[in-house]
Figure (cartoon, each protein chain N blue to C red):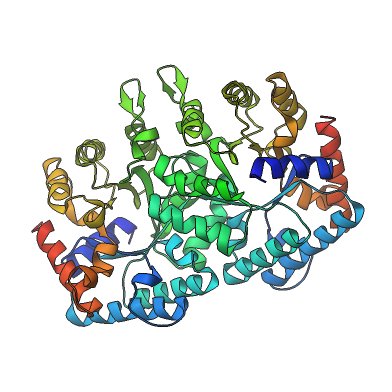
Length: 280
Length: 280
């Protein structure tokens, strides 16, 4: 199976297109202990809860930075968490925004797919074809590669909105991505810019290729899942190929809900997000 | 001291503007053993040799990908090598091409400066101000941040050469960098594109600010140190602020020179590169 087929199967099996971001911040994790132990237990408790309640995301996205900030302990927690989720059959996207010259990208691809054992990775497009190529080559082995296209942050406008003969740089990036494309190649498009999301969706649908979207920015960043789904549908895009990501919105829902039951709160939050996304 | 001052002092102390890239590839390292031990010993032998011969680069640049591809053993070798070079007073640039939304970049900055203990880092510009900001904020604490501007690889043209109202994207990135600038903020500009290097050098000299260049691409990638220095001088740029990087050209010089003495060959290669750069 290529990564697109894996994504569609996972969405149908779990009845969800939610991606659960894993952004550990020890101050927000209600478990005592060193970062390694607290983070590992936090995610294994959530894993146990979502599996037993059968409210599962169809992709999980550990964010490299949030683990790596705690040094080797954090990195060991990353490895243990990836292993635990994979053991239960989850697809794992390592959000690491990798990218360098060709031979260095090849080393990063080894890191991500061989060492960390991720199913997919996020990569940066600034350095072009031979930078993204060694990752996309791995699509042939069933892996997924999400290239940054229109990101969800405020600074996205600084470079991505510049106009090249009337076309914004982010759409030029979309065009580049289609030159590099193999099935399993996807894009990161923020939920915080629904008009841009619609334009990008229309562009990719027009190419006739399946290009999975990873859509961060709902919840704490202010994007709306309802708007995202409307934009995808109105442009004729296939919903189960795509993922709407929520990280702290799910993980730390217990704070907003004023409860100690962080697992229950995360499950409730995922149910709400599934409802907001609606039928597809 | 801010990072610019550290760079100038290191260049003058060592009589060199060479940056030694550290790209470990176990198949090329003539030391038996597991990756962790082989890599650590390889770099500690080189360190001992360059210090005792007093032929030192004024910056060393471990490349994250090449260590991380060997998993935890490689990452431990990275930590041990950074510690060893720092102990001898070297400035260490962690080449990791980091960059994400603001709060994630803040976690990456903690990773790079607090955990790895690097003096500087390379970052990607695609996500804009709030992505680069948490790194540049650390310039106030004496750290350096090199933003990708015009990279040395073939694919650099795909995005960086697109024209925005007649101005290439790479120069738009230079303009963005000046909006974000604090002393210690530098740029990555490949030696393989001397005309673009000259344009960028002219632009930054024109701003009146000191912007250190990290210039990869000489040696195995085909760029010429003589041309680089000529481009910097012709545009009125200060030489000791900048660094010309060579990685495999230095590390694996023993292969080209057909000797087993990899330390001696690396030293000879650095002497040659210093000569090619000439007086400044």
